Image 1 (cartoon, rainbow, N blue to C red):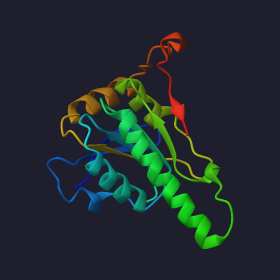
Image 2: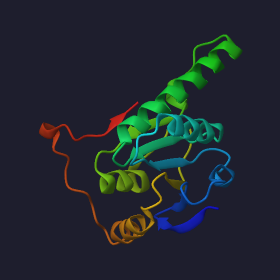
Image 3: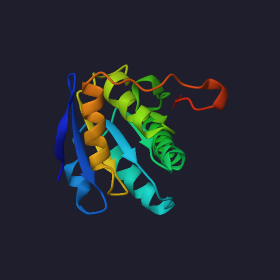
Image 4: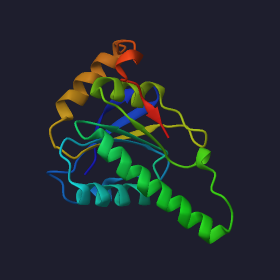
Amino acid sequence: MMEALGRVNFRSVWYLDAVHQPSWPAGLPPADWLLFVIADHYDYEQLIRVAAECMKRQPAIVCSAGLCAVEADYVFDEEIVAQARAWEVRHGAAYNYEYGTQSTIHYDFDEGFWFATAKAQHARQSIHLIVCLDLSGRYKERILELLQRINDGWLPPAPDYDQGKTVRIM
């Protein structure tokens, strides 16, 4: 199931390989965690299934990275909105998105992982658990390397706003 990879400050980092572990959903925590989802191949149906499974477990934040980070983020946003609309129907009141799942897109994998481990915050809950869900099955070594670098004080380069490479927070 989930494999502990290390810590950054007070956050523990775990890894799930969705390619080689078909029962990966059983390893997800029950609530209030950060999902770092890595998607390199665009498969809309797979992303829908992944988003639905993950959102059942109420992550506080979803950070999307990889070659298909944008597509993954859009699918997770669709699921976030669908859950919010269902909540509104059940409760007859407007959903407060400030307390719901937040999502971010990271075009630069290293910066995204640094953000997830060192900076991501949520209004509702402190983040102490990060789950790296690897939909490509090939990022474990890179994550281990980044854990070491971040714990040694590495910071990503300053964002180049002129190039449009910034994080988008929903």
